[in-house]
Length: 337
Ligand SMILES: O=C(O)CCC(=O)C(=O)O
Ligand SMILES: [Fe+2]
Image (cartoon, rainbow, N blue to C red; front, side):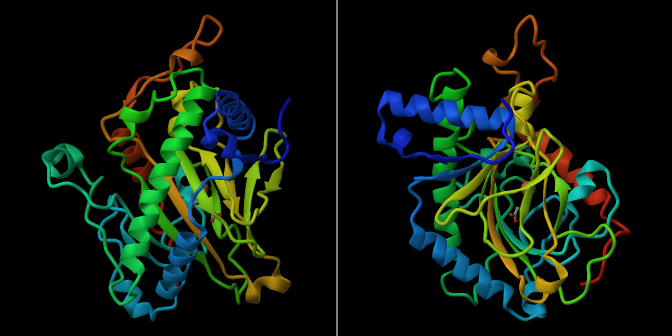
């Protein structure tokens, strides 16, 4: 059976710890990852008060004057830290498409509380533990974003354990590959659209995510997240109060030898009649394993009928190759904000 819509899966039976509960959740999650690459999770245990604090500090940041936001702009192409203005990025560039920049602005952070150790700051670490920028003028910004990054790291570890069970591996299989992960957290603001978008311009162009998994707190507003299913239709992702959208990325697809699907998705423009009051805020956590974790076809994903499709690659090299594509196509196609 192929899923046409995105399933909603309650994680509490897994978190309660019975072996039947764990098996049932792992089975449902694995089916969603095979069939559509997306699911909505409830019963995840993340504090709603923490989500509200991050939401409030992100809104306060985007409400700052443009000059204050630009003072915190992304320092270099390979360091995804700080602010990117409307039109600076185009997610469809990663597919080699030239289109106008996305109608969104963002603020991103990487790992927090990084130890002073050569693994993290020596040459092999590349840009993966680059220092974060903080909006110091917003009192709870650093504290709430730091706590949220940690809560998302814990939830990702739980999801990776569920993935391991769903892939018939020992439950802790991924633990030592994600204990120094190089994930990114970003808030995305899709502004009201007072003017019609340019031809081909979206809130976020069609793309797949790069890493192991992504966790999104969406907002139910006109012009939302859509997924391209196996029947080649764009389907809306349901918005479930208190839930998170989870999807797998290209790295997990490669790890599973294409058994699981890293699915194309986009953020659509609002209909013109609602566009003047359609601003939308997303909180997106992109989970990415340790830079030196090797992504190599999993035991349960290969066999005589299923030969290995990819050369082993490290998580860090896999990620860096994606960034090169995203920014080189950006030149010359930027729209001024
Ligand atoms: O805003 C959203 O709902 C999703 C954004 C997204 O897909 C991304 O930034 O990779
Ligand atoms: Fe995405």
